[in-house]
Length: 92
Image (cartoon, rainbow, N blue to C red; front, side):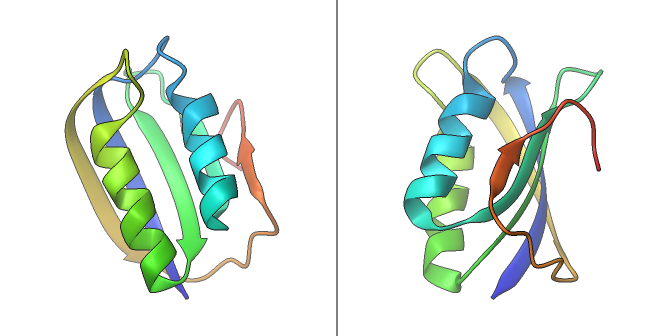
């Protein structure tokens, strides 16, 4: 299991990025949360096994149809043992 802190930059708000990311996370069994940042970025904390996280990161670099990802920053963090994946209004 690994924990990643992910910041996605580009046209990632107002394009169903959070909803699409939640659907992808649910399909892959990835747990954590996603939130819009005030500067236009999207911030994600995600946990899962190596295969699921590789697939999830592929998604984060692509994004939904109407989005445009320009960069993705990731940092490994300490496991927090999230129970599911949620769209939140502010960071917990």
